Image (cartoon, rainbow, N blue to C red; front, side, top):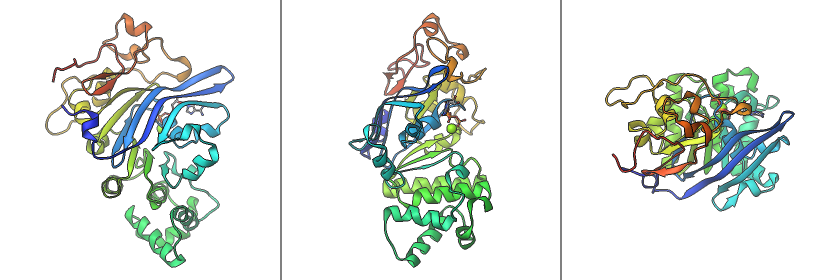
Length: 337
Ligand SMILES: Nc1ncnc2c1ncn2[C@@H]1O[C@H](COP(=O)(O)OP(=O)(O)OP(=O)(O)O)[C@@H](O)[C@H]1O
Ligand SMILES: [Mg+2]
């Protein structure tokens, strides 16, 4: 069996999250949105963050970008290491300078992240200038080719447009072009292709895949789509109720999910040709509200394997056959292939 480390031995570790906790302080008292979260992304690696709506994927992604921390109601603890630098301990101004250069993010809501008062041309040039200075003419050529890479072939028109003059899908593509223009070391892409049709989606995922291979770009890809994770991921991190419940190589996750929640997520994939995981579970219910988390394991009310311990005691993530799993009764046993 391949451990996550073996599967990704090619690249150096670029991002390491250690014991990340995100808490929001509102009128009703503190509410924990992300807990005990640790994982890493290596150069040239695509790590997929999966889980149902409300599981904490976007909060985690935005926290790595230093954006959650801009809200005075939010408290972030733990370490966010980019190389040897701890972003969590850096002044906000230094993190701001890294954004758009070393780390960039494609947001789940593209319209909210493009500035409505500037043309696409202006915003893309700004992004490019964070990385390098070129003549205006050379800049324009770069912008047009960046747009072509995301399937926009009437680049002249799009450059002159303001975001509100473009469709949601077009804005999403502009966002992706903008994020990739600076050739970041780390790309965080939060559901980057949800508003796009299947052909464009495939083209953009292929572009991201090429940049990680050719330029060693590291990618944290947030997705609902287990099919995308199966195709692209070097590692899959499954989040539930603000916690990582499983972190493993995709071949392990898909052939033998260890966490009952992972198994339930897999049951939501439409049938594929070839081998199917044996243990398919439909999961009733939905992700709990962070202000009313169940006792013990947050997943226990939806888990058909829950025991007394699961009701009372929160499981700590531990190593199990080369993966990390937070479960009292995992579906696999140590050393049984
Ligand atoms: N600013 C905030 N204040 C209070 N609660 C928040 C805030 N931002 C997010 N949350 C809550 O944190 C939880 C996780 O949200 P998050 O957006 O990370 O989910 P997600 O996994 O990205 O879901 P989706 O797949 O729908 O995008 C949700 O319950 C959400 O309501
Ligand atoms: Mg989200």
